[in-house]
Image 1 (cartoon, rainbow, N blue to C red):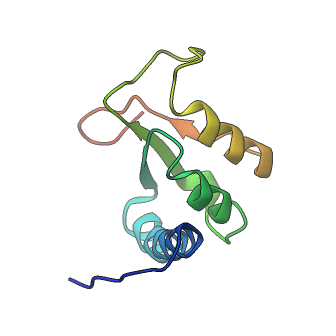
Image 2: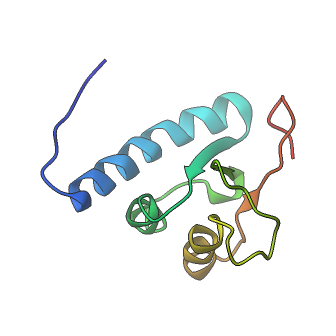
Length: 106
C-alpha cells in the first residue's frame, strides 16, 4: 500500500485522475470494460473534470453511482446528475450508468 499526503483538492483530483487513467486500459484489455464507481456529492467533480481530457477508451468506460441516497433517473436530487453532465459536455458519447447485475453487466 502506498499512502500520499497531498496539499490541496486540485492535487488530489489530478492524482485520482492519473490513477484512474492508469487502471483503465489494463481493465479494458482484460475484461473489455472499465467500471468506475463514483461517489455522490461534489467531492469527485474536480477529478471527473480532469478525467474528461485524458486519453481513455471512453466507449468501454461504465460509470456507476455509489451513494447512500440513490434517486431515480431525472430526479433533481440524484447525485449522478452533475458528474454525468460533466462527462456529457466533454464527450460525444453519454456515459453509461448502471444498474448493473452481480457480474457488472448493464
